[in-house]
Amino acid sequence: MDVTDFSELPRIVTPLLAWYRGTARALPWRSDPKPYHVWLSEIMLQQTRVEAVKGYYHRFLQKLPTIAALAEADEEVLLKLWEGLGYYNRVRNLQKAAQVVVKEYGGELPADYEALLKLPGIGRYTAGAISSIAFGLPCPAVDGNVLRVIARVTASEENTSKEPVKRNFESALAASMPQNDASAFNQALMELGATVCLPNGAPRCEVCPLSHICKAHQLGNELAFPLKDQKPARRIEQRTVFVVLSENRVGIQKRPPKGLLRGLWEFPSAEGKLDREAAICYLKIIGLTAHNLVPLGDAKHIFTHLEWQMTGFAVECTPCSDCALTWVTLQQLREEYSLPGALKAYTAALGSLLSEK
Image 1 (cartoon, rainbow, N blue to C red):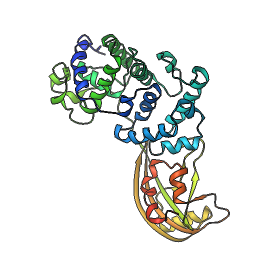
Image 2: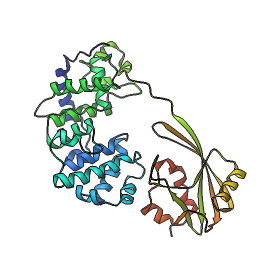
Image 3: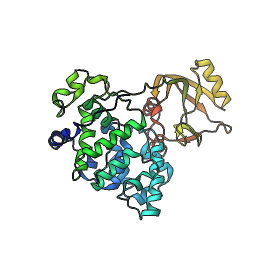
Image 4: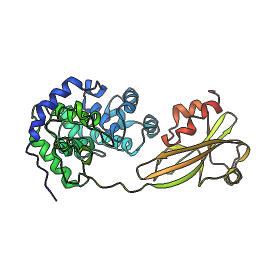
């Protein structure tokens, strides 16, 4: 395996920082980089676009403005605040870490990379981001965006999916980082990867401040980098989802306490793509007699390693005492119960099926 040549890496510092100071996006966690705010934003931004995070970030802080409030929050409140963001273990670990911070650090995040790394849900990248952005410590923060930028700048032939390679990139960045400007340096690399040095398509090399240094650009082969493992094929599951209605209420149930989307609420569903007759039979099995069955169409949701291919029905019925559903109004559903974003196509249909009462 070829070893990456990082000897030219210090040359990126001056043009990168100049570019960042002139073009950085105005983001709420940048304008007020309190440790809790930086931490929350970094957890929310994992696997999620910046524009999608902004509203969640403001709502979360409005409801839970301190680490102590986060530590004490009811799980239903947490899940409702996170509803639609996905990867719900993120918010569960966020609360676990908050409880440790309250107990061991008086409710304030420690200004120490190694201490941060020991908290639930905080890995090397997040610990580096908090350390540098919130506390100004010269710690690298290497995520997928940063790996891509550095792999292209150096035309690295190493597989960036491998942990030892990531550690080498971290070490090289630590050696090149301006000791008194770690926050801007790390954020500039993140920003470049998010807005210019793009994945899955043509990078915007014409506006990149590092194009004159970038070896991949000089080779005219930017998309060949970074080298990484191929993702495994997703498993496909077909499901039939029932939006069950009775007396201006919808029937929901809680998912099991373990496994995918644990602890969230959902519409009842069956494995497979059921036709009308099979759907009516299934509803009888779970204690429901359908008076009317209306198709709601197909929908798809992609998880990391799984794809749900769904078909939906709106069902009008009379509830049975044997049916293990919780009946809620549309207002209650919107304010109190957290449904996964995977069901948003069918959640959206409720507005036309139920009144606001």
